[in-house]
Length: 460
View (cartoon, helix red, strand yellow):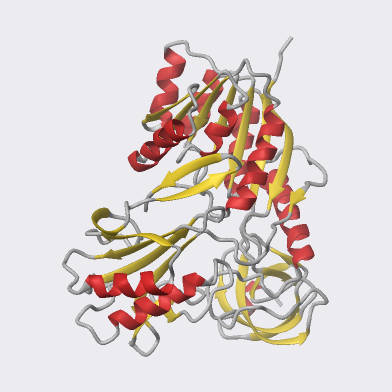
């Protein structure tokens, strides 16, 4: 059987051997790679071919003929239809092993780097109720009825009514239920991402895992909400942990849960969170790690790699709200954070004042431009920290850091593919991978964070 004979709609039996990045099972038919949506390593399954690509075919499970020994009962009623936490039916120990292997495979296959050997991974604790931020979407279900919840797997234009979610605290589902009930039967219709009609766009809930404080952000198109005080009152009566409720307007066609803050309906528009003995004040758009408890472990690993003596000048690129900058400042001579989002910089500067840290400053600038200016002015750093988005580092950030030439670079990544690509560029620029650790920030999902240390080669 070859690729051309595996046409769309065809049903075949496969044995799932591995798990690919983003959680799809991997099988082979006569040497051809078959990605299996819903398959786990060890499964024997009857699948339907759903797509034919140049180097592989895609399929979905129709029936599990022989289940994997690693299969476990999922916790959530929406599992299988929801697009999130797709590994919930895989034993957690196996999740960890597969994620560590994926990081290693990306380094060697994508980055072309020397095999680092077995990669240590720090498990998540707890494995449920750990998310401190959720973005829920207003939309239409398959029958065209208004809904508030999350997207079905592979159908980003649809929304299903959420009744529970096991990843954030339980009161998030309560906030969704109250909001759904308030807007049901009103004149306010869900925004349509293709037709660009409607009003209600997103409900964003954020909280401090170590403080319990909750921020609720209603994101809409342009317009006014009448009787909003009734919704606010219902939320506050049911969920007393809510300290602020805000209204944000997204006037663009972009299907994202951000925009311009229109009104503060309750509180100060911010909430607080703690990392260790540090306090942070966060607004609707402030970047902060989505799993506070695992972030503490991730930052501890980064500090261990840094091995600071107190004499170092440190550059923190993509510094966000300053979560790691302030911790590094406790052990370094000086920290400079650079971040493009003004609200994040504001939050970082406020955290400096709240925590009375004198040796940490933040600059609102594009990372590649700032690094280029630092290199041309002769400023030198003993350590650079980078924590980019999933797309990884801009090529000019990589080349700028190579030119800036700090002795050490610590790379915090949420995407092993772009991490491997960037580490290969650093390697070509004279930096050698000295250590790497995986951190499971998001149990039951296919995502994995890593902390890597590269050092500049001393050429004799």
